Length: 263
Image 1 (cartoon, helix red, strand yellow):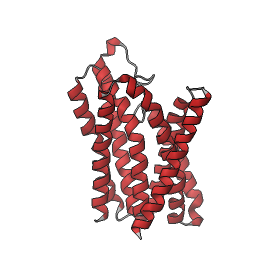
Image 2 (cartoon, rainbow, N blue to C red; image 1 turned 120 degrees about the vertical axis):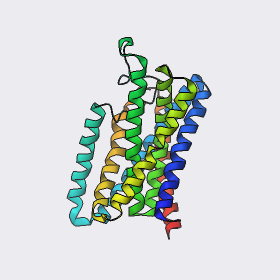
Image 3 (cartoon, rainbow, N blue to C red; image 1 turned 90 degrees about the vertical axis):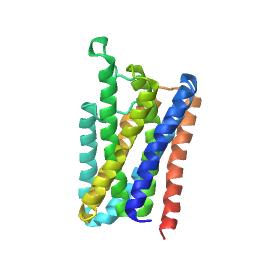
Image 4 (cartoon, helix red, strand yellow; image 1 turned 30 degrees about the horizontal axis):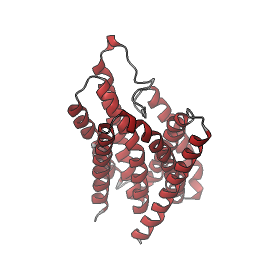
């Protein structure tokens, strides 16, 4: 398979799978969803951190060269600040609960406004995910696999929260599931744009990877981990740590496996 075919395969399969699995969990009922969601968030935290620190950043520094390590650091810092600004604009907010502070709305604003905001924000987020996946594949096959795995791990709990908010906004179940599936596929558009934009601009790839790492770290540290801290019981903390470590180990294992397949 060509690089473009791999990019299209993982973005289409990842987008469809995350949306369909989220729909399945949603249909299972609130009790099942609320029990599984914290575990999914813990695992996603580990997968994102593992992909950033084991896959993306080492490869970005290696590709850019040791002499440009300072520029890589600046790219990561700039990415963190950019995602902070985007979150302030409610374009990069990831809800992992049926309701959250950012997406609350009053009756005067109408329920549809909340649903529309979620679709716009999710579409923008998935577009960027496609860009990051394409940049990773253009750099190295195994890095693309690892990045796609981390994106999928994070997409599932995000899709669960988004579908719940769409339903709470007054949307019918069928319409919410259909629109969420369509929006999840905007990652394919982002991947195609990045492929044709970055294919001839290899010098930019290390810095795109750095921004990808920054996005993973920001989501894990600023969004997911604070939610995990709401559960203070010792048993919950142990479970969370176990799943975070599991996420890191699976990403590390996927890195080695994909590296072996590429060679």
